[in-house]
Image 1 (cartoon, rainbow, N blue to C red):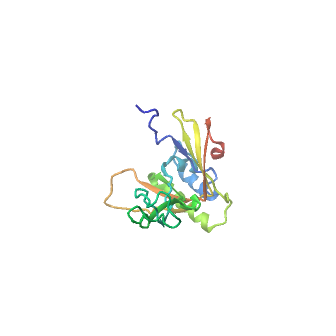
Image 2 (cartoon, rainbow, N blue to C red):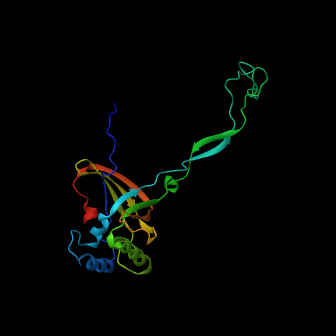
Image 3 (cartoon, rainbow, N blue to C red):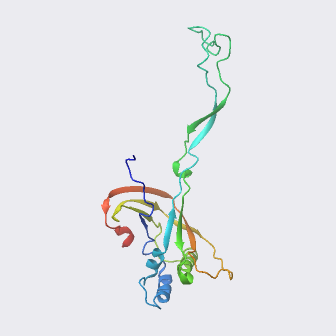
Length: 222
């Protein structure tokens, strides 16, 4: 019998911040979305609703190897009180020093250098491909135009309990878009199915916080 329940991987909340989209992009797609009546009327809500999964990387390369010699304790020493310099020989004049081999040690480097500082978010492809092109144009604006946006954007992954209350969050500090998947059209593919695309973020630091359950995160929803 296990002492803890298995986790549910859908109990999380990740939203792009309200000021993520440049003003002119938000205004452009607000007109497109409001041409027909719908539940989602703001571009950032439309974009966040299409988020399906996220991938947070793990660590790798946290150890280092160094060649070392060791004594074989299974071979008794030649004398009970060996003279200096004679401890390398066993009772039958066998060398007690083992051949060189690789010994594993903890790496002396910063763990952040061993962390793949990439954060991938998967979006559902919506009808009209509005959310895809919304992000596509946003990338051009971020890199090619001088716009008023946070200089050090921070993204939050909120961990929820069974009631939907937040129990903790992962804070990704200084996030920047690194890439977006390409788009393929196909005349042989006429059936509707659930397509997805990925956005890759790079970040500089990570912080994990656990708090008593709270109903919402004002830093994300403000």
